[in-house]
Image (tube, rainbow, N blue to C red; front, top):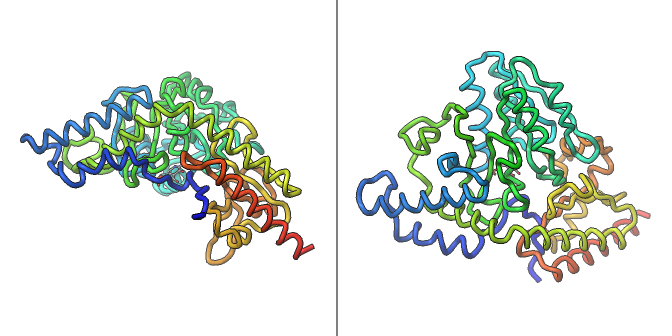
Length: 380
Ligand SMILES: Cc1ncc(COP(=O)(O)O)c(C=O)c1O
């Protein structure tokens, strides 16, 4: 059996339907969508279609979609775009301690430019209290940015409640939904967001393409200047094949959403229950219910996660800890949740996807249980 892939939150394979839709735009249709002739018309139509498909998934207007090179660029565009457009040298952002580096490091860069940032704490489940958002608002707050679902533990935030607060206070509200789009419903009106980030490669689209939803009437400053593509918000000849692929991935997400949620929940639960039954001291990190159905962040008492993964090459998953120059540090997300170092260092993120099946889950659980017992037996 080939290694069981359980790292879908890192990236997903491209769905076969997505790849076949993209192929003619790599081999045959090469025109520049801005060209006035027939070659351009063909790719322009493809971009229009892709934009509509993304809009259909988010429940927004096609003109509210700005294509980017991925999630990181969309996050940068949202944060810097809003802050720069506001022209307030004391501009203030509210975010959380558990955001992806694409948000946290953009905030750090803005702080170096003199702007202010509040990093809100989370509770032990990784949940932000919406009232903390309200309390953090100042007269200079120009943006609230809170991720929809966390990439490491999967905890889902109460965006609509935070969105209410943002609206009451007349503050822009962005969410990094790179991990939730395609996995759970992400309609912008239900979430009450003004800006939303998504990344194609997290839900069976290609790498190097993403989008930022920008609600009509919200003013942002472009980061890449040039010609007038993407409504003047992101210059550069369009990544047509990428847009076609992203559009198709969105269409599949609309069609398969219910089935994906049901399957991921069932397979994920089975996997966790097998591990919990087979190994003493197994703990689930993150919110037990209010979480992405595919994401299972699990601590193995008395085990170092990196060492465990090294002896389980049959399973491809990732640790919650970052390894810097050989020394392992506790994941900032787990640290923010108040998880003590030993438990944090024993945590592995298993993220399931559309190609995960029951056989793989049983196989992965069996191998992990055997190797953990082996390690504990040797140490004990
Ligand atoms: C929550 C979140 N935001 C942003 C990103 C960055 O996306 P990309 O790799 O497409 O730039 C990721 C990718 O890991 C993510 O999980």
